[in-house]
Image (cartoon, rainbow, N blue to C red):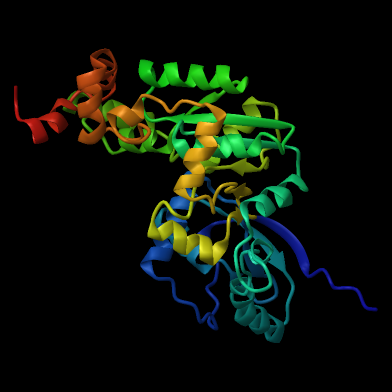
Length: 344
């Protein structure tokens, strides 16, 4: 058996305007792709080298990155050099992206041979074969409560975390303390991605705060960042599996997504242990355990997860001290109330 040749001969940093576009390059890069790549480079930076054929001087892979680096006046781009003949160069140029595009998400394990999704118990069993320790995204809502109850008998350690929309709200903290006492587990608190998004977009912020908030360069925090932060906080690996309370009966989009992809995301290492649970089963699970729902359900009909009028108006009515906290973070939030109630 012959071994694969190593055609890589070096690496370095090159000025982007000194790199030669390949005359045989057949790819075009639409604006959505350009915008997506710009976002990644702005947020993360360089994580992949441009491939250059040392023999011809042509770029083999990375034309868009080089073009964007030139437009941004970047001083240098990371490069890996390969040694290829002109025929080999054309072969790689023609096949590199199409081969990558053939990759697909590993969802096959999420379904039975007849195409039906795994049951909730089968999903839990499959994840339990991977690990005995998981994270749980816990919103205080009925679905996340039922998910925690469903998972308890199966895992040695469950590490729950709560993503707060607004910090320091007493009615939220009181309910978290109740669930910590009931389940006997610490619930970690992390910022919700929506929190950073609202601040970056200057939601209900006065003019004098705008430059200050912009200068903070707040991160584009993601749900995966929340789980990784919790894992590190709890002394667990970054790739610890995360459970969530998403159910396919919540809405049509979730039903369609569940039927297409199943309850396990193998790439993100997330899973839904109650994806197939209907509303009657959900209510019975919570009622039979004797767990109380948070006061949110009396005020909003769901758990607190936004600051629009549905939530801010009810908080203003039932918990004025917490509304004062919301106003500290979003000083112009009274305008949201005025949109519906008028000035009083």
